[in-house]
Image (tube, rainbow, N blue to C red):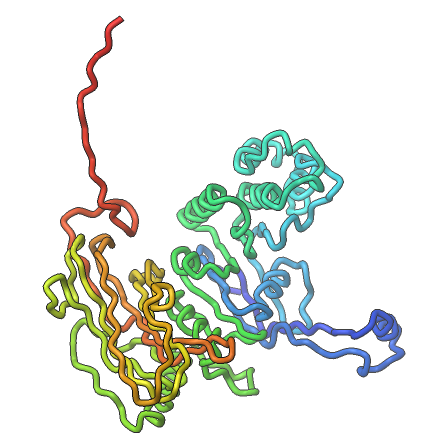
Length: 446
């Protein structure tokens, strides 16, 4: 294992036995029933992963993809069926709500219990006790048995212990989704401190904005298979294809996996071929510096977005919009099939891939009608530009529901670059168009 590597996972597999009846488990434990009493569930299949020291890596994937399983194996909670894991550094992990807590002990006792399980002495925990209690901020409840805690108190204390014992590697599984907004903000601020200190962070989250904002790299798992790893933006784009069932998954020979660039190219080529087959031609888009030649495009072909552009307050096509002015987003759609109720959408992302804002025709209650094959529609979204000055990426989509199943007919991700021009940028993503006044206060008299 190289010196700059914190976590190394080699050919990792985990197989569970699923029993229909408790008695089948007993029979199998004594070797009396053979393989007929259980089914094999492959939670992880031949996964390879390397996390370098100082990296923040996020793991994303659908439910049941093996995200939590790989974290539990890395931390030693589970043993692998095959493969190996090597770790260089002191790990602190928060995998499940209150994992490792004794329900009968109070909060103070559990702090010592967890700290000692991690490998700290009583004296070392004493030195960190004030920081842990201040971070948890649960007051006198810390002297009560943890079985009386709410779920919020539980995770506050557990996270406070995990984050304040100065680990070299922090592993977190969805713990930040619990607790109020102030506690979540405190946790993410601690993440930023850890990154600045050069510590290694590995965490699972369904919050894709957090993955984009905090991670140097993202790993995509699907049904126990590592589909790819790369920049958060790339992996999130592919993940969204997986969610709607329009990603070309690897063949049954899952030991021969492609890297993220190959996956991306294969996905794009497959979608382009499918679209060309349906429409009978390939659409040539106008050459424009604001158009992204590497935009991600996919869909089942029931509808095609044939044109898209933005106009400024004067109705002139432009990729530069002045902050505070009105502008309109245009998209033109041609339908290749009858669709009961298409939904038209747009989304703005920043250059990190974080979704800033967006809406769709269903939310706006602007169009809830069926369309016929051959119909063409022009859709416009008009609004005031309130984003801060900077560069943004605009995405378009046509979706709908087929027998209650969400379906993507056509999506264009990050296809258009929009520049917001501003002579006054405030804090954050949005300008609230604030009016500030300052006045003298007359001095009072006794």
